[in-house]
Length: 398
Image (tube, rainbow, N blue to C red; front, side, top):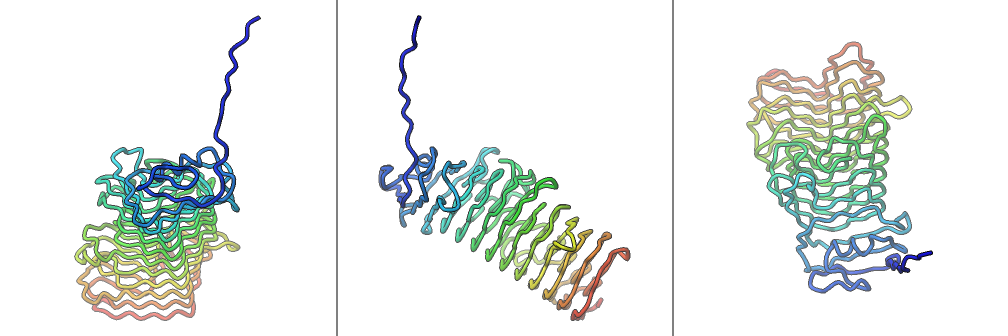
């Protein structure tokens, strides 16, 4: 009879709960200080024993590294993993199509990223933060994200994206219960993209009080989302000189329901591109078949200063059942426009039921010779209730 040699395997224990520093000026000492973000991620890779906070020491950056945070054993509602950026900079220049993100939460849950400056400096690719796969209960707050690439390919650049692919923003990712709050995002094809699908929606995500500026096409792009709150965001393109069709907020997907779009400001679409003839949409909802019990609500939004020369639609609804538009203010007031294209405050097309347009104020004073209308109900078969609105149209073709 023979026996194998005895082998002793020692594994590190759970990383202790507590508060630690990230400081590039000091070597890593797991008891107190981590030299880099990746050293911090390595320290928690075998799990945590409780809530862990990493404070980035002010003045210690920039940190030039790509950071991927995986699922961490022990992370939960009472044991979050928090990175306090203290305004320090994390930057990365992506060159590989499979590694586009500066910071990826790879199906990671209960992660907080707060107060970090994130620069995606690649010439072609640049995703600021990527919620990959089923990344849930994460908080992205008070960060400043800048995308350097001016690529006009949708998948190449985004400020914050949630999807199921490292290379695509249209592959469903099923991210739920995430909060995106008070971030400033500059550049990208889109500022924020969240993607679910008809089988499994992204649920209960929140996009609140963000400042989104100088994206190429989409401020907020949502596909198959349910019970999302999009509130208090400021969305504009004041200095982007090369632009295309503009969507301030875009919602699609047949299972998109019970979503709230409240108190957003969408404006200055063409601050540096007034001669552009690309179409401009404020809030665009297409194919989102909500129910009477769980409608999609568009309320208290402010849409103004759409200052390009293309088609203009303040609010647009296409085949979207049970979409409710209440108390919005739409002022399409670019009097210097020379557009020959049409201007609509609210436009509904493709048969839909349960559409309501109530208590809104729509003013159209845009210049140019194109046709103008406060509202246009393009599909007689649609079930639309319109009441208690204030309309004003004044212009050469009004």
